[in-house]
Length: 625
Image 1 (cartoon, rainbow, N blue to C red):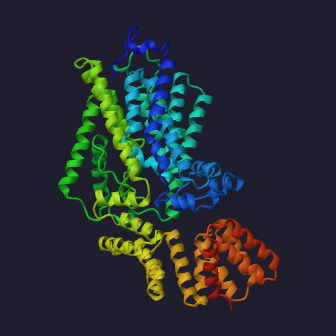
Image 2: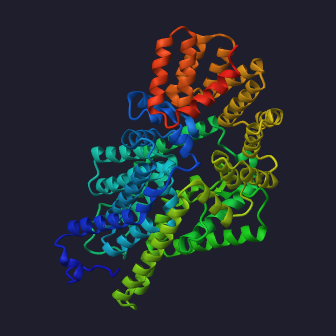
Image 3: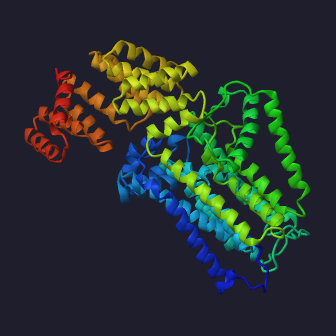
């Protein structure tokens, strides 16, 4: 960690050039990061968007095709616009299919690459190799970043970070020799970052901080912290620096507006659920909780429930006081310790879009939101400790302490990766470290229902409804439980209750699908059909709704219509039972040979043809005229 002075012999000069130093250290950091995260290859998909984003997304299952490209560029599905992220998932499907290990390892590789680029970026900008390495290693190994890597559907975080860091590196290249082509590269990389996830909208603001330190581009500003070997850049007046950011700022504003539009389209905005005072209090306390997690990263969870009541005024005031004190110290020390101001405002500014003043979702905070902001905190920590200790503590002692800290973080990260092994482990952990977490109860209940453990699931549903009697997700799960037990009347009432209060299109589509199935199973095809049709209007690619319409068409004697519905459903989600239903429909159309050939193909590839045939016959028995 010792500061490298020019013309000073050290063991680090084993390498003959700064380029070789950076290359070797960045490769070493990437290798260590990948080794620590290698256990993600043993993790499966979880029921936190992995199922809907990846497994049940027909566009991604088709692989990397022109149709997938067109869909990714025009889709507002899942409340956002990030076409590059969709395309990366589609590429994963082309390479690995539905094998979770491949999807997870791509995330781990991207995170390792981000760590290496961060080191290279900091070293080239500051001239301090060991400090830069430690900041990048903290980023690579801190357990709060496990969520961004071990959660397959959070590909958007690691991918947007890649383009963000490349954009920051391109900006340093531009600052050393400004020109239109270099600025265009910065602009392009910012576009690619935004097309991966809109969290990077603060990029223009962070570039201004980068101008202040370590680039020292602001006219009249010099930093005593930069070593002599650091490459200097020409200084520019502050008005010109601000004007320089205008194109990037306009791009950020446009993407922010697009994001708000997408989230309103998907009814993801939850500002109306929480009062302004509630959101302000949560913002101040969440900032402090992020600070605590930075130095004491224990009891992390996949979901932190948002409080519905106001925080105690004393707690909010104490949080505000702490934030103000740190801000004043950073401003006061801006000449002697510019990294304090840059790191602190990097943390505050990069976190601002996700901190909850504009509430999206139901979480109070999220580990994934710290992915970019924590770089600022790590800068503050490493530079402050090294500046204060390098003259009083031997370099070997500093190096030993740093190594011990990184080993401890690696152990915590390894443990945290294990919590993301499967849905049951993940949500059980969340319930163990949080309170009144109805989302964790709901998610665990959904897993238990899919695992055939309905009685266990109901206990979590009832716990969730105790926390929030208006929890529509819990109401839906309770409806499916009653549905599975044959209590169709009770299930119908619960689905109707969801439809009465839900405004989320996906939830409404699910409720209409389930309601249609319940009506069909009691023989009420007149009410079932419009339910399936309404579900498909809200979400056109729902195989269950298409199968439901196909069964109703069979009941009505419309065999060509039934074949069309079953065929479309099988294009979206192929199943043995679905193909057997399709075979029966085309057989009733008079195409017996084709039907028999289809049954034979299913028999050849089905892991349990007898069970599939039994289920298909059960459905057909209740729906043929």
